[in-house]
Length: 373
Ligand code: ADP
Ligand code: GN1
Ligand code: MG
Image (cartoon, rainbow, N blue to C red; front, top):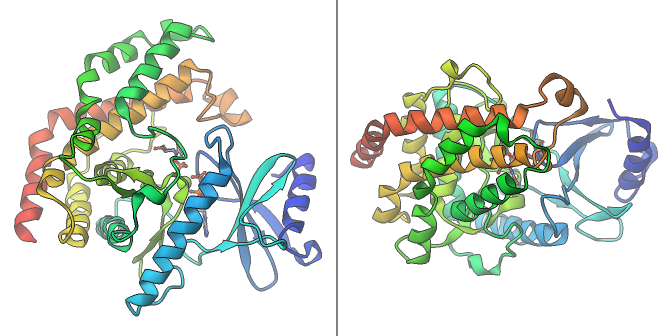
């Protein structure tokens, strides 16, 4: 349902791009946690309209700058390799005034063509995960000749886990809504593992692993699949493309993808690792990256999975302490799941424990796939 104020605002935004009289319908779309996404439906086709979250992204203009550079590079590369560029990446639609974004009531909006594909919030289809691994690896290949230093750092230190830890401690100290006492065990869980936080950042700083162009948010519903043959087509949600480590993209995809439950699951007995998914994903990923990935990166893949899961659990817990400012709750969620971010944190911490208990088994999967390449 779209409320009336929104309707007026949406009408203004749509008019920055299209003849409003031609619009057949507008609907809220997708299940991302960050932006407000709508589908604008016309007689013959549809477009995606998104309000960029300006709490998360302090410079939506910087976000659009990166997306423009990266999508153009990918398209050019795909064409250069004699492949079909349609649906090889997001396609930005400019406003009638030829801008990459529209500003309405001081808020930033953007528009994409609607890719005629399908995204999954959750599945245990192994082929989907083999495809996911392949497309995340392919993203590296497509951007291997793009200088990562050209990109704006839109969320500085996005995956600097140690810095996230310091912010977490600050939120505990401030305890702005007096929730600290409701999550003492979880706070302890994070503190006990603080030594995880530096491993990847240090490896990057010391040059043990290279800095690359990284998607930084490779969860399953940020990957577009062909509806018919279920092949992965491209990565979407390019807001967080920045300089970083490939280990984040590997780890973040497994974090949710290889979990037997959803991120919001309360029954922690259901939060377990599906090892077949880890295998299928790793196979696709390493097949696609075998010509560029270094041995030091391969050795740290499972650490990437571990770190990113710890990091997200800590981010959810920090946000719970901060009164859900970042991962905002809908009005409905505020009533039915007021502690959703704490529950999400618990869910991620259960996964962290599962990864710890199965670390060798996970590393053996990477070794096995590497041998088979
Ligand atoms: P968020 O940052 O909030 O996660 P996304 O950019 O991931 O926003 O968009 C949310 C959802 O909307 C995606 O998971 C996908 O299902 C859908 N979506 C986004 N962009 C497109 C597009 N260009 N074509 C088709 N569907 C899209
Ligand atoms: C957010 O935007 P979305 O829903 O794809 C978040 C990710 C988290 C994810 C957890 C910019 O991803 O970092 O891993 O939620 N994106 C941002 O579901 O913070
Ligand atoms: Mg998304």
